[in-house]
Length: 108
Image (cartoon, rainbow, N blue to C red; front, side, top):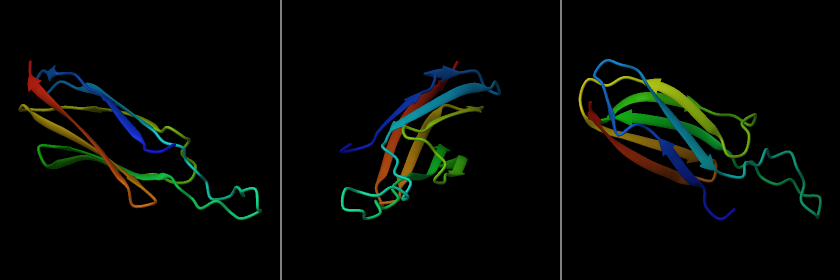
């Protein structure tokens, strides 16, 4: 897989103080670091090792992921807001790549 592709499903608006669901999925072929290539050499580990979500610059979620995470990791969580703003989602890869997505959310 050439590049990971992040996808986020979040509402366009939410009521202040009311929880709402956020769903994320990133298309990424995880590699555990335990398999061997055709020549018998270990294939280096390549996983999404961290996921963060910030709202208007304030951290909401910060997860450390390990080798037990499957390919195309799906993360779902609830959040609440008290003002309109931007949700910024960031996935960190073992190879140093960083993948981002953002969603604007208004008050309902």
